[in-house]
Each structure stands twice: as structure tokens, then as C-alpha cells.
Length: 421
Image 1 (cartoon, rainbow, N blue to C red):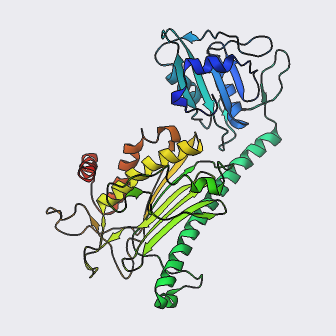
Image 2: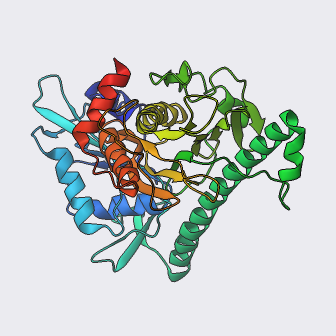
Image 3: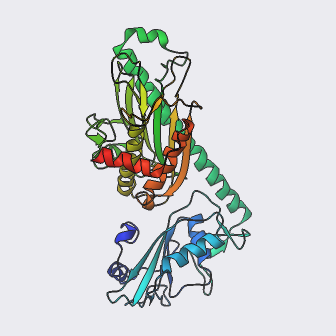
């Protein structure tokens, strides 16, 4: 339970029940009677190895098992901040574990739970970036569970980091290629003349103004689920599409997912309107959403534009859906959040940005200065909803600045108030 239950739902009773089972300390579990002087050593070593849990406020006996009933430490404000401060001050690069302070029924005592994921950003060093520790599976009398990493082990940890970065890039490239193929196949199936537009790679050029939002573990590793299991998550991660493109987000909500080798995709397109919607959920934790955002109020296409309100609502709905996705697959850790608005103009078209529909104060269309706008950030999975407004504002402002628009946070709030009713 301590390993799988949502960290925010853990209680004193959960810890007491776990400790009563007589689980001995091991490579994944450490009991601390009080705040230790070298907490960073255990945190970094677990992150460098297989992850694990530290329980501060639980005494251990000679058999390395928890003493029950648990005593806890004095409950006071700032215990979580104390852990975070130690980590940020002493570990390089820093680790963001899950932390929960669990008080007893009288709120006199507490146990601090620190749940550390296996890191893909290894090696994590302490002592002013001079020592690297790993967690061992055996402990001799009087020795710690941690040992200094050898040169060979440090090299493996560095290689692990590089391999994970390269692997993540390959996931994004595969998702992009699948989207291109889906769009090409859709065009060719509905428009025989489209065959003349196919390039040397067998692809048809994407329409103007394509919007991509993605979320992925910073250092992806082992799969969380199988592709059929991932397919079953679409209904569970849906949120209401209050903008009105579809009933639910992610779009298309009515399409059955197509299983691929490492996930499941959904694709839909309207060839006549040059619009498409593509979603990929990946077994390694990638959530990839892409759609065209050119909107034309009539069939002439003369007044086609990008609606700022649509971009902002997509960001809001995507983050809400992502929070459900990572809760469902049980991922707790850092996420790469990416936003990209690309192909804004070409020799054929310069797609303006429309602030408000029929905005009387917008006297002329806003033209982009750069063809592509890219925004990237890192956020903890458990803090997605807490950080949602910041992520939306920061990415939305970067898009607006490309159009010479000094977008204010209060304006974004106004969009949401109007869209959500």
C-alpha cells in the first residue's frame, strides 16, 4: 500500500498497518527514528538505484524491522519543507520525491513518508557534488545500506541518463511520424488528386497552424502497461470539452483507438476543412496530442485564423486529462511539458491570431513574426493541477508575444470565464 497508494491519501493508520506486518529494511525501504544528519545520502542512493521509501518517525529493532506501535516524531509545521530544503541544498542534480506528513489522531506525533522514484537523471551526488552513493541489498553489522559507487558504476549511471534521453526523443519522433502517416492516409483515401502532392517520403504536407501539446516522464524507462491496457484508459482520462470542438477531450472522443506496438492512437480528420485531431497514449508514459487549429468562419477561407480561445482551452483540458492519465498509470515523478505552434505561415498563407471572436477592439489581424513557437517546462506529476495555471499562462504568453500581443493573466482568466460559462 505504501508503494502504490496515492501519496496524498496515506494516513498514520496505513503506516501502522504496514509496520505491523514486520517488513524488514531492505534496498527499497529505510526506517529512521528521527531526522538523520545524512538524509540526503539515503535519498540520493535510492534514486541512483531502484527508488524506495523512507519512513521518518519509525524505530527499528535488531532484525531491522519496525518497532510497533510506532512512536513517530513531534508533529509541527514545516516538516515537508525541511525535507525539500535538505534535498535542494545537498543533492546534485536535485531530486523531487513525493512527501507526505502523516499525523496521528491527536496531531501530536507524525511520520514523514518520503517516496523516491528510480531516477533517470543519474548520478545524483552529495557532499558538494563529490560523492555518489548507491543502495545495496545487504548490510553488515554497523554498516549503512549505502555504499560509494565505483567508477564503473558511475559510468553506467551516466550512460543510463543518456540512453533515457535518446529513448525519449525516439518516442516523440515515432509519435510525430504516426500522425503524419495517419494524415497522409486520410487525405489519399478521400482525395484522389492528393496523390500528386505526395513528397519523396510518401507524405502529404501538413496544413498550416498545427498545435502540439505533450507530456512525458523526464527520463522514461520501463513500460507502465500493455498497449491493450493503454487503449482502455481513453475513457478514464476524458474531460469535458467546454470549447465545443467535441463532447470530450482528448478528441476524437467517438473514435475507437488503434493499438500500435507501444501504445494506442486515435485519429480523425476533415479533409475539406484542413482539420485533423490526433492523440497518442504510450506505454512508456508519453501523452501526445496534435491538431490543426486553422478556423474559417465560411467556405471562402479568406478570414481563416487561429482562435486564441481554442489554444487556451486545449491547454487547460490537456493538463486536466494528463493528471488523470498519470494517476491511472501510477507514475510519480518529473514530467517534460511541451507546447508547439508550428507552420504558422508559408508562401501560401499567413495565419493570423484572433484574440476574441468578433472582437471590436481588434482592428487588424495579428501576424506572427516566427513560423514556429516552442515552449517547454518541467513539472512534478503530483503537482500538475496545482501548477496548471502557471503552465497555461507561460505557454500562452510565449505564443501571444510572437504575435506582438502583451497577453495578461487576467485576460486568460476572462477567456476561461467566457468559455466555461
